[in-house]
Image (cartoon, rainbow, N blue to C red; front, side, top):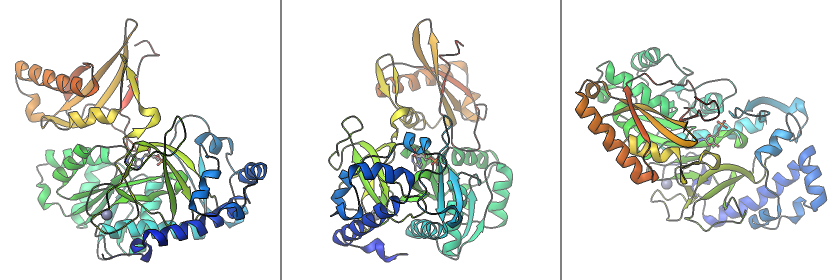
Amino acid sequence: MNCYHPAETWSREEIEKAQTMRLKHSVQAALASPFYSRRFSSLGITAETIKSSESIRDIPFTTKNDLRSGYPFDFLAVPKEDLVRLHASSGTTGSPVTICHTRADLNAWADLMARCMHMVGVRKSDIFQNIAGYGLFTGGLGIHAGAERLGCLTIPAGAGNTRRQIKLIQDMQVSVLHIIPSYALYLGGVVRDMGLDPRELPPRIALIGAEPHTEEARQRIELLLGLKAYNSYGLSEMNGPGVAFECLGQNGMHVWEDAYILEIINPKTLEPVPDGEVGELVLTTLCRRGMPVLRYRTSDLTRVIPEPCPCGRVHRRIDRIMGRADDMLIIKGCNFYPMQVEQILLSFPEVGQNYLILLELEGDMDQVCVQVEIREEYFVEDVRALTKLQKRIAHRLRDEILFTPKVELVQANTLPKQEGKAVRVVDRRNKGQ
Ligand code: AMP
Ligand code: ZN
């Protein structure tokens, strides 16, 4: 194994030993914050009460609401003058959640990110284009720092302006991209429309993440852009990208357990679930000093992949994120996640790169309308062929989500697209439209 950091090859015992020691330090550091000092003093939690990584179960969970109510400074564990950066999570409702970093925190984060990129073959000699929004979103500066840490020539291209992105890729002979999956699909569509051969496009690797996407989406991105795409998972509350990342095996993401403690719980009972079972991901920072966050309930649903990874790393792998607990839709008594719809849609070669799930009211009844872009060459087919396709899509969706949604075929590039994370579901039920 060609590793960036020695911790990648640690044994389980070494990881657990480091976790216990680092958890003690993290609790000690957290006690300096107003939030955790209040919370821990009533429970008698101190660094001394941490005997092993298992002791984490004595610590209460931290929720998004805790972070919101602690906005802006209740979680800070160091004086403000020791902080050098602030990021925020992308939530659109309520108070924002902000995360502050010391210089050492940023340094550790850049190292984790560099480790992820190195794992999939990114090297100093690579030219790296970061097609992600800079600003408060961690996919900009967070990934940027990792690429520079590795020594790549790093292009902070930012989001949007697709033609300029493609020109940069070609002119600079860019070999590695970071790009949000929904935008990668769109960019791939533009590449195809421009008549470019994906096999002749310079990039060989894309890091894709920041939003849920299916294996079907990954395969499409690989095909459209002629490269290998690796799943990158993170959240601002835990720094951002660099928490978990796929290795060359492309089968689940290794969580860097020397930097985070990983738990999967049943979101109703809050008890741990056995490895292999889907539940809510809970994460604890082990190395962050500006703003430690302990047992954070991410809302993200996944499972630990119990089998050992052929790559040899023993840092446990989590499966592709199914979605957030609050993404689940309940329509006509059936529960489903938007990703189940994506999985079906993108398995049709006729389907283009974008879709939208509309929730509507028909009388008193909830109705789902799936609008799906059809590739130009199929859209010009006769009405009979299109009606047949529409029915096939509706049937396949019914098999997956157990009721038949309305399916509307629309022309390529007509659905709204975002510069950042895609909006896959629009709820029109309250507006009476
Ligand atoms: P933010 O901190 O605002 O960038 O949002 C973090 C959230 O984005 C996570 O909690 C996940 O819900 C989602 N997310 C990030 N990376 C991935 C990924 N690779 N797959 C699925 N969802 C992701
Ligand atoms: Zn692996």
